[in-house]
Structure formats: C-alpha cells, structure tokens
Length: 114
Length: 111
Image (cartoon, rainbow over all chains, first blue to last red; front, side):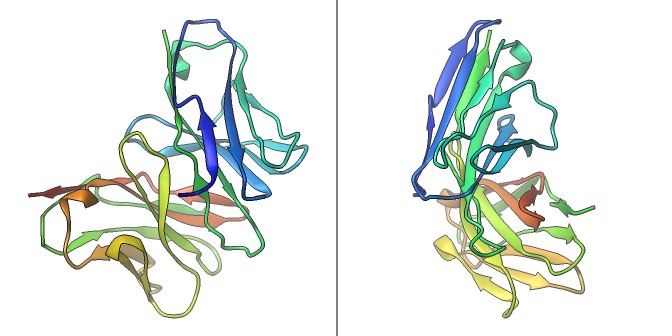
C-alpha cells in the first residue's frame, strides 16, 4: 500500500456548503495530482502541483481550488458545493527522481452533494 | 496529441482461462507505459510499467504486458484468470510530467 491518505472517505453534504478534501503523502513526493472520476468511468485531471507553492489547473475545468503550502499536503476546496460536484475525487503523487516513476493513488473521497 | 485507447469497455473471461486487456497508444517519442487496476471504492493500484528493454514486462499479481512498437500496443495479460481479478483496468502513458489515462476496461472473471 502506498503512503497516501485521503479524508474523508465519504462525504454527503448540502448544496452551498464549503468543503475541503484532504490529501497527504508521507513519501516526500514533489508532484501531486487531483483527479475527478465518476464511478467506473475514466479519470479527469483537475489540478496538479509540481512542488510547494506551485499549482496548475488540469484538463477538466473545475470550480475547485487547491493549495500546496507543504510538500506532503495538497487539499482541494469547493467554496460552494453543487449537485454537479457529486463524484469521486482521487489524489495521487509521484517522485520525479526519474522521468518514468509511477503515480501512487490514495483511496479516494466519494462526495455526494444533495 | 498524446492519447491512450482501450478499445473494449468490458472483457468477460472464465476463471482459469487466459485474459487479455487491450491498450493502444499514440505518443511522440519513446513511450513510458503503465497499467493500473481499480477495485470498487478504492484508488488505483500500480501493476506494471514499460520503460525500455524487454518487450514483455512482468508485474504484480501474476500480470504481464507485452509492448509492441510497430502496433503501438501494450496489452495486459494473465495466463490464468481468477475471480478476484475482476476490476477496472486503466492503461496510461506519461506525457510531460503528467499521465494520460485510457478510458478503462472492466474485467469480469466468471466462476
């Protein structure tokens, strides 16, 4: 098992609430990623970070924001949750000591917005 | 543009039979290719990767994959399928610093 953690694992919340999904890794990886995945479907990259104070938007437009203040921590925030945000959110990290290291994934957060 | 295709949404195989999950890619330069597996309500788990060298790559849980440069393919294989292999499988390629994932193939191994 990879040392990458996501909390909460499941979250049911009402429309308009602000939420933060936590992601932490203890491997010292410089690169971290957030993916959105509807159950059983493909992954969509929504945010990534190449290091502290570095964040970029991914291929899929998202109303969420991220921050990278510490190497090990990459939280994702939704200021005002909507039912369209209902999905699974996967966090991943990798080191680039070499160009072809694999990504390690957390267990995911399944978000339901009512 | 870099892309990964998995032409089959679903693959069904009987337990004990060999399985193949197909993947083709389109990249510029040398491809770095990966296979991941996802069990229900879990994140993705790394199975194996091809970087260079031997075209047959061995990975976790008895899986292997064959790289074929002329066909731009990287098919995942296992000689004898288990019911516990039933899951969602993703092929991926590195593009720059990020990964490009295929759409996934659901494997069902029937007892």
